[in-house]
Length: 273
Image (cartoon, rainbow, N blue to C red; front, side, top):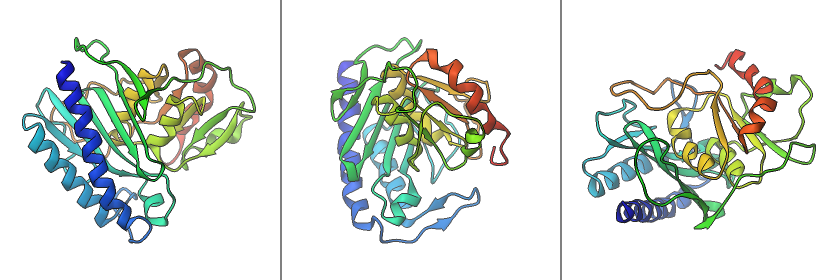
């Protein structure tokens, strides 16, 4: 498996670099259209989606692919890539330099490898998390190939906690940390993996928002909670995930779930849910 994981990592590094070089020429310069679910899409999203799909099919022809801009049905293959070609399209179109390219690799419906590249910041995150899959190989979470770990600190007014635009109802009660709003689901969670934030919440992420970072945050020592209660993975063969959202809480260590889950659960009662 070692050679396979090396191939996977090299593929992600090369592909996201090539795609980001083109995307940077459009960054902050093109207009977006609104999709049926209210999210935005640009011609750059569609180009990046197609380019990444074609690269996967050429390099890993037996692997399935599920992406934000094309097929949302989980395929009947042992291996499947889940791709978000531009996570943070609003930031991308407005010239805000925080947006990313996200690739998650699933084995039998569960993510085991994640890679996210943030081009403007030149930050490449990746991680391996095998769970009970029976797979072996490299382990850990990394930022620019250097190991990263979640914070072991207790919450305090000087620690950061990330919200999304649809999770502000959390602030109806006193909150134990400083709040930040990143505007990019993957980066929200990656900041927890890197130890910069102690936790984060996303109210309506789709499967392509979380597949890669689900791996990375756990590989770094954090915990990922679906606030709806059910397990997100493994995904079901033949199911269309286009309209499925997974309200998520991410914390730097398992012991903090009891602190933040009662506060975060309010987002499941919001009109966006």
